[in-house]
Image 1 (tube, rainbow, N blue to C red):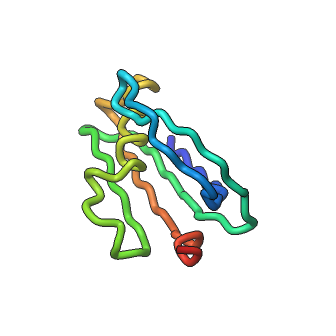
Image 2: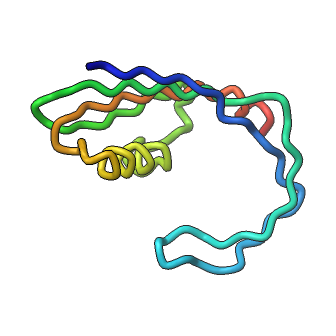
Length: 103
């Protein structure tokens, strides 16, 4: 069975951002003041059965850099592990960066 999901990822503007430490899971602890804005990125995810697990990410911005180190790739792999389907699923993600125009 193929699962398809498309959602908006709401953007925000950081008015203040300070890294206060690092958590045990490697993510940073933050103090932040931000304002939500009406623009958003769009993420589309397709999951389908497969004989070997793969995760791929495509983005409309070349400045994304190495997809392997992207937070979206890390999240996709973590989802497959948590859903207990990491050995027999293919996940394809497409990221449309609309909020990048704010930068």
